[in-house]
Length: 93
Image (cartoon, rainbow, N blue to C red):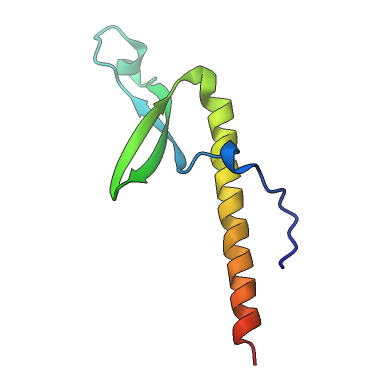
């Protein structure tokens, strides 16, 4: 078994995907976005049945969603590390 400094999160406490910040213009003539101050919004990018999708995250939920995505990445790294270590254990001469 591989020992890790990573604290494993509860599996229910994850979101699979990546956080993506989009900056856009809204199309209103008098909006500040037409002068270069684009609107910022957070999305979670993930593949669903082989197709990419972007899910909008409301501002009030951004901090929590970023935490859950970070938990997913941490678990994914730990699994990769354990797999590599176990593979070496069975293939080492």
